[in-house]
Image 1 (cartoon, rainbow, N blue to C red):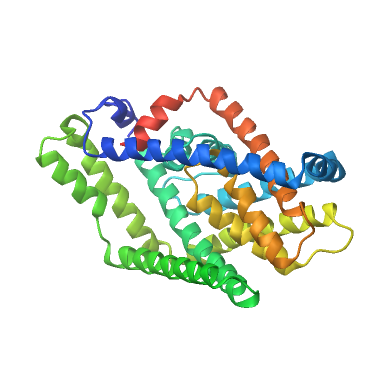
Image 2: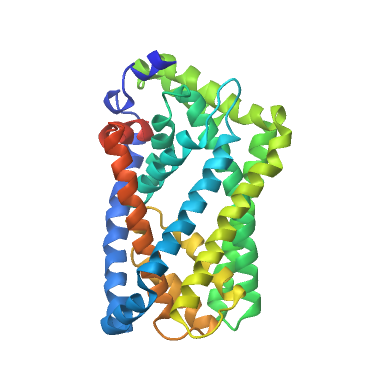
Length: 357
């Protein structure tokens, strides 16, 4: 399998039909990022620079160290879920997956199309321990479990937010549409796994027959088929891992709620509500998913936090300060991820090419 890595790089293969889609995603990312920067400036201005600085100073370095530590716990539980998603005879330990998850998080936050690159980056980061196809399938398997648990988390948060607070009817309608959309995606993913739909390999086969990217697809289409088979086979081969993996994914969100609660506690004078912490975290997760094309979800994260903060009655500026503190935490761990990338000799253009392929 190591020889497969040295074959023709997808980044240099004959461009196919996906090139236009990648170009459109890049254009959309640039426009959304510009809009996000505009939103960011707007919320900084309307909240007040002095008030935000005062909140950040009050939070302090000790508070930031705790928040950074809590995010490391989130990295650990995602790494634990990934460890359980690897096919035997291969195995990954925390020494392998923790740096890889940090690298993936850095790519996801830093690059406009990081959502396309982060999974590939994690698999490439552990390629010395696990063949690339096996690594990619384990990442995809873990992501499916994460998507399932996250969907339940988002649906619960959306239902409570829409039904438990006074909202404009337009917002209630929009939230209901989001709930229906999430449910539809979950049902589709479950049916896809049960029915074992081989969308990717069948697409590769069609492209190969049409003479598109034949150099890479000559062997690549077989690897894609193996990749899909390993994902679908996992659920039948390792049924006892289902609950532990879901437990890890649930812990990821529970720690996120604890992080929000702690920030609100440091910024306020009273014990914050767990419900408010839950709603702020669920909306933040939804914003991150919907606007992943924007680096650091700049602007939209602040907008979402402010919307929830105003609805649940938080003091003025607290929600935006919360978003800024969490953004600082993202910047910190992104810097750590870049150090791991440099140390491992990975190159962003190569990772981007593999992801786009």
